[in-house]
Image (cartoon, rainbow, N blue to C red; front, side):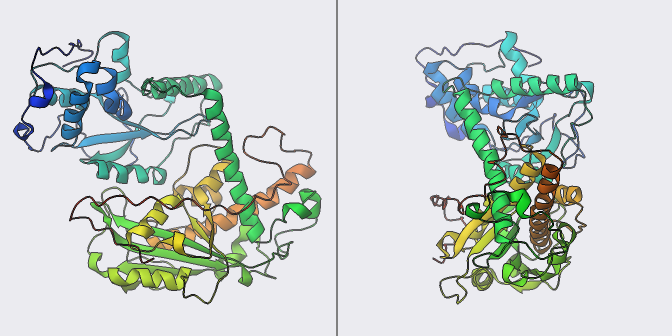
Amino acid sequence: MEGCGGFIPYSRGSEDISEFAWSSIAQIPIRSQYQLQDMEAGDKSEKGLLFCPWKLIRLYPYSHVGKENEGDVAELMKTMLFLGRAWDFFYLLDPGENGRDPLLLVPSGQFEEFLDDMNSHLVIKLSIPTGQACEKFYVTFGDGDTPRPRFLGSADSDEALEALKIRIHRLPIDDLKGLSATTLKGYKDKMDEVYNSCKSGKNKKDPEAAKMRRIERQKGCGRMIKRTQRYLGLRNLAAFNFNFSSSVRGWHVNMPAPFRTKDSVRFVCIDIEAWERGMHDVTEVGLAVLDTADTVGIPPGTDGRDWFPLMRSYHFRIREHIDKVNRRYVHGCPHLFNFGNSEFVRSQDICRVIGTIIGDHQSKDKRPVIMVGHDISQDLDYLLKVGFNIWHVPHFTDEIDTKSMFQRLEKSSNGRGLATLCDELGIPGRNFHNAGNDATYTLRAMIVMAVKQMVQNPVRQANGAREPENDEWSDGSIDDGGPPLVSLEPVPRPPQGPASKTRKPVW
């Protein structure tokens, strides 16, 4: 099948697709002639390479198969999609203000081969449609120095693909600042067209409602920074915050925090590393703690760096998985903890060890715990995998995500990997992808962003630059970030079989 082949309607008389013997589908590893060699995660694709959106492939049975047969074709496709087959995935970030998920792409040739393989088990012929619909399956990028898709990795299962998607925010991103206004608009329009091609058309969304949800997400990022500042004594409660710029006028970073907090809190940053070939195998746990009781009377210094020595860092390696080091997608370095000595803990004990640091029902210290992370939802989910349910800790009060904080700082819907974020914030860092190091650098980044935003706003307002009333990223300078927010506890998934390695939470 080359280019845009003809689409043959599904007509099989009295024979039904579901009558096929599923056991006849051979589970032989398939090596695509379109699979790419010697590509590292983050590498740019060749110019002119044809791509097909992954979501469009998943929608194929519903958008290009008749109603009569779509269910059976969808079932066969689901069975064969990763059956002995690896797909090469690429990604592009949304360049607009919509905050859409990264666009996942695969080489169009791999989808052609997949359809050919499907056809070998059918008496009907599946193909990419002709005409204008064909163009959606063959997309090129890179015109006028606009971004080309970057390699994400190969996946041979849904689980492997989910593991790749988690890593997108750690990989390089494209700088769009060098593009002319015309070129940038053309690129955004093209990306809108590709995103829209992946919509099923069955459930049309209200664009105004989608816009309101996007604005609310963006303002949520701004509130997160303000709550962080409030916990650190850098921002007052709204009831006493009638004129924020005048209330901090005369304050500078070489003075103690200007506001007295009602209670001290503990920021606990978590980072968890899992093995790339078995995401249930947690290999490292890193934590970094900042107790705001220790910052009282201590000036933060430039970008809050004088608070860095007040942090305590921990790095735990799981004994059973000590030989499992990530090399395929990221360069793991579990032996290179920068902030002390690593400790070796058995998987059955890691939950108890985490509890001694974060706190649990037996803890004497009942002060609020603010959990911090870079894309924090992933790490809280992994805490569950090792058996520690943070939602059952009574003094778990709030969540701070440095990825979201930086989106507010840049007013961009695209996230940044931790290494990139530290580089752009001027935080020296090395040996990333070590859980203890990443937890420490993430907590440092939180401090830097809170102080930077604190210092910049009064200076801007003193120079006559005020936040516009319709700013889609802020509720205004008087706002204090609102009440603490904790995500909903994930609904437990049914076990996937006897091989499941997820530990039962201790609470």
